[in-house]
Length: 292
Image (tube, rainbow, N blue to C red):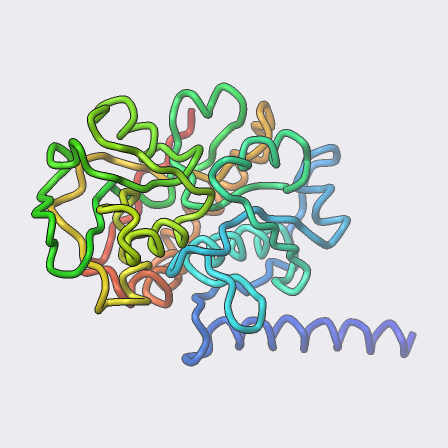
């Protein structure tokens, strides 16, 4: 009996410690560490399985400042990471029981299909082609494709129509790369597996522009403001969703409910302010969830 009471007390202290850490002013994070200890789910659902296991595996990116970037301690941080913590917390899972798996643009669908992750939150644009093989909760944020150039814009690039004949970098498997390939075929497209390589190629003169979602580019610029700048205005809409296994409607509905709860109680905005909001020029409004 004494052991049981001690374990319950220790669990309470752990939860309070995690919640306090998530709200701490010095850490890059929102309130994603809050844990719903009273969570209860129907048997046979993904939620019940994960709660019983007491652990979850989440796919995110490790090279995108503000959204998913591995820090000096080897832990990912950013807005996507905080969204992942929110979902884990509603499952009754503390953030120290999350396993983060690097999920670049090209492997997000395979990782979900092969059960290498339980869900993916990784600047993952919802589109019809991807919905053929995975399901999406959300969107939880809407970005827009933009262009990053060298500081001072020596090539005079003002928008996507100016990319003709220019060497432009994006990432394999991304919607921005496909948009350039399909709608701006006169651009000389170079593709890497991660955006940090595109930034390096721009810096050393291998390419003349980098294109992807505006918030991703803002993150890259925040790390090297002397080398890069944005041009023009976003020229697409990129609704970010959370990828889950095709047909897992109960899990998708649960994540949608979690997002709506976070919208309403302020945790979504707190997560934004603590991460991407430090650089983004405008405070966003939560997008309407698509419960298809």
